[in-house]
Image 1 (cartoon, rainbow, N blue to C red):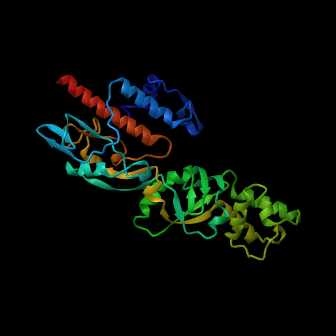
Image 2 (tube, rainbow, N blue to C red):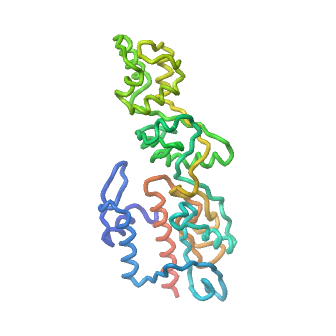
Image 3 (cartoon, rainbow, N blue to C red):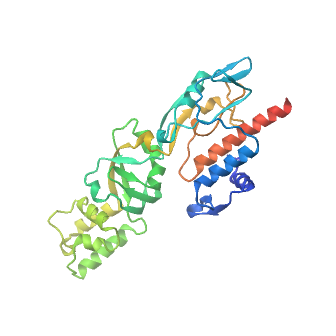
Length: 329
């Protein structure tokens, strides 16, 4: 990543005509706001430079004989870069072929698992909050949280999903707690509740909460706050009830029993073991002139373009090494 820094990345893309715009949280996007702009400009530049694309065909076999790589028994190459990606989102065409090719050359594969993926919860009454979106705090990370019929989604959920997915390999379930109002303290909330009660305003609890949060979420929080079901109005809340309600707002509990898996994950953790890859060139330490780049390797990053940057950086290193070798020849 140091060899192909953000500055180098930006400079490269600007050189092929892609302009950037700064978004939220310091993230950079194409000025066109279209991912297709990145793909099409890269493709155009490759074709301009004479790169040949073989479409609608599959690499069934990769061998090395007589100092040449042989693809499908009929194509011969001096160097090969494996950039097949992972098994994430098979509906987009992903496969495990890169892992299989790596194994054939003696490489170890770290068992892949879903990362940047939605979480499945066993909580009851999830249909009550399906479609509700908030800015919340979970596992010390702040961002978008989307409540769904199966559990949780949103940017911050994707960010914490890697660790949870890994833990679920050894645990049946994991508890997570969401602060649904991270910009206000427990003490402030308690004061707000006490203030309305002291004024003896005869108001429905859910209606009161609806004044500062989504109504569906308010009802769900009340149900999960362990307040007696017969208490409907603010004036009947005891100090213990208020503390229970505030604790639920600040620590809404979800039991996670799984993830949506490879079908919907944006990235996979695991892949080709990096201990047998030269980190300066991305060349295999087991087979000369064989390179691995991108997500096929056991490298994965957070949400926010880090995985794309890794793919481009590793590709830059591999191609730079091949160019150096050809200059020597």
